[in-house]
Image (spheres, rainbow, N blue to C red):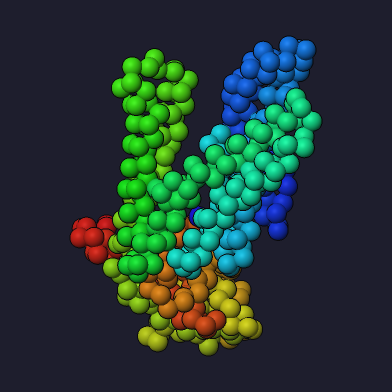
Length: 380
């Protein structure tokens, strides 16, 4: 996930450990579908309810929303627990998703984040099933039974072994652990996701047709929509894995230019922007990178004023996100660099090792190095 994603559209309904929870506007479409499906059945079974039967259908939709939000909140809590920055939990027409920055993850942490969602639904389903016998007959009993069923169904469906489902994350983590290659795990899990789509289509549409049964139009349309979404997610996972594979072939040291720290309290006369021992980077009193000091900015100051002009007067202060800490894993370091460039749209990033300024990376030089690794012609 992106480090600085756009604010999700929809209504913010809660916060989990500081993580905002949104109900997207597209979720209303799903709610209407649920009401249209269960409302007529409830009205037929309970004619005494009249129009209230559709109100009960709305409660079924709310139950589904609760199941999805608990599922996604579980992902968010565990992701934060293992050290990831979590941005938002969102419920939408496709169920829901949790946006967080997965960089610096491990196979174990990725698997823990993935499995806790279905497990939370399984726990909810078992709790509802345990309380169900004690619920009053009629609407309360029906709502609890439906809530138990939908949670067990969500748990089982999400554990199918292919991306973009949680089960696919478990496949990715397993391959990553066995091979040491995160990109390979992503590609394998993406292909498994495509296989899951084929199996679901055969089971939901192919087998009934082969048995001579009359196709249920709603079932066909809903299956096609869900499988199209899953196929798109699986395809995106394969492409992402292949891109990660390219990053794994590039040593980040190749694109990191040496840098030298310049105190923000220094004056311009103390700085030679053409010095060969590193790109001048302005740092604060704690050594945190604040800005690059360009030759053009310095040239704009008359020579006679440089003795009393602090570098802070001509520097362009950068946001804190422009600093990327390197952890020593080349693949993870490159992923962090690429994601930060994408998120900040910066032309340069400062990199640190152990909290100490280590160098500067240019987006142009990184792009050229990636092109070279892939055998592409140099960019103009």
